[in-house]
Structure formats: C-alpha cells, structure tokens
Amino acid sequence: MKKKFKLQDLDCANCAAKMEEAIKKIDGVEDAAVSFMAQKLTIEADESRMDEIIKQAVSICKKIEPDCKILV
Image 1 (cartoon, one colour):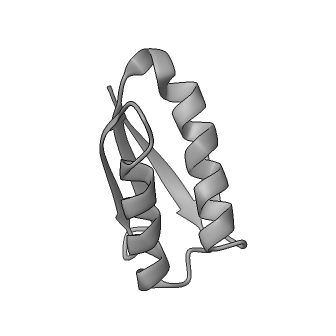
Image 2: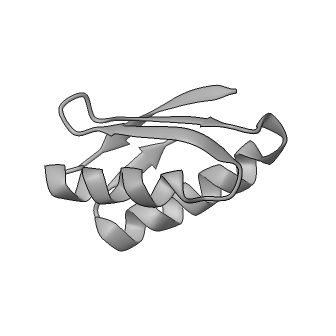
C-alpha cells in the first residue's frame, strides 16, 4: 500500500534525505521518498502495519527536523 503525506516546515534538503534514509529502514517499509521541493512524503509499506509505521516516521522526522510536521 502506498500513502502520501504533506510535510509542513521542512527547511533543509539534507534533512529530507536523512528522513528518507531512516524511514526506509523501518521494519515493514518497502520504499519511502521525501521530496524537499514538493514538501511531500510517500511511504510504500505493509497495509496492516501502516499506523505503526506512520508513528515511527513522525518520530524520525521530529528528531531530524524538530519543526517539521507530517500532516496525516
């Protein structure tokens, strides 16, 4: 299952790359993409674990860029 989310206040392209790399390592994630220019996050993952994966992705984003929000 693929889901797309709008990102708010993502200010750094390097941080976007770090977020993408970390989200790809979450168990159950098949693929992830963070677009700095479009301010979007796309996650492709196991549908049954999507809620848990989103929570982990939010946590990762907060650690890397504290002002960034994932609009779920």
